[in-house]
Image 1 (cartoon, rainbow, N blue to C red):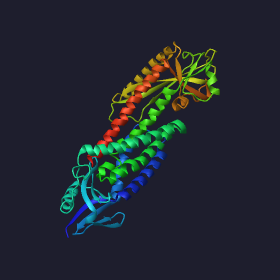
Image 2 (tube, rainbow, N blue to C red):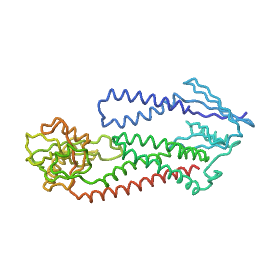
Image 3 (cartoon, rainbow, N blue to C red):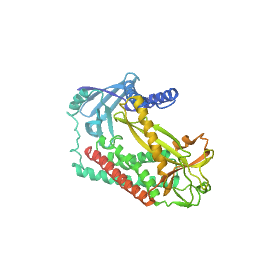
Image 4 (spheres, one colour):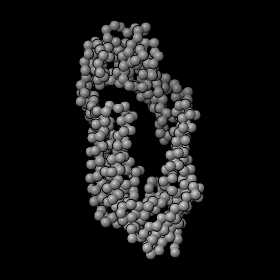
Length: 432
């Protein structure tokens, strides 16, 4: 009987060992590193690749393919795990096979069954995969984008994908709206819940029907579909911005009246006292998670000053309502440490003057930012700040101008969702 071998690995065990090693590495890393360092991103990336290939080595197996007139037999032996498997695949149940590029540089031999199921054998050596492809071609049909029985051309496959993705977008967008409008979770938890729902909805609304429609593996694999099930997360931001556009500012005579009321998004006050030349608190935060390919890193400068009702601002006073404004700066990475520090300090001094000059004109309205973590940390322990502080962001433009800017951003986000979804549909159609 003809025989062909392929060095592969057990995909199910590979996932298990990857998760176990990653969890162990994360626990060790969190216990050894008290805070995120500048080189941590490089270390995490290196560990990610190392974990992937270590798990691959642990689960490595040799696959032997043999066939007769009725059956394709595949024997798998994972030496490191001492696991031996034998698959008997009746040729009558096989629809065809393909050598598929799963991700860039990663290939798998996939044997498709007539009932829309499949057997996947990850490739470790591409040269062996080419030899196995030639061997399987002698008795199995090789499936391509032109051999699909129902969608032989791109447009028909693309139209089918659009129908599924459109329904998926409607469901996930409604869910995001419900979570944002009624649940009122934290931003992080909102994204996590919506991401989990999106993936679950994708499994049933897109992946399962496309798989049953006999599309090839790349059409329903998790990574090529990233564009589809992650795009609706932008709907969360759209919901937030829509809420801002619908909100009307509440007016109080004095700022301290907001403490006794439930939180509102926008505020206006009849009487205010602001004097950043008397009291201002400031800091700056250097971004440590910038892309390694970028030539610059970001520095965010924070300035805060108290907002009082009718009394003048006093150095020995204690205030619990603060106005916070941020300024962004970009610094080139190739500059020396001393020059970077000087540039940051110079920018900080300049923006401090700009911050003080802004309040020569009373702001038109104020936006609620009570949960600003960095601003609250900035005020924590300050002699002029209370234990519980209310953070407001001042705005000098008219509120309708601000809302018009949010509307423009909504249009851009909707466009991004449509483009990302269409890109996902293209991946599906190409892998029909």
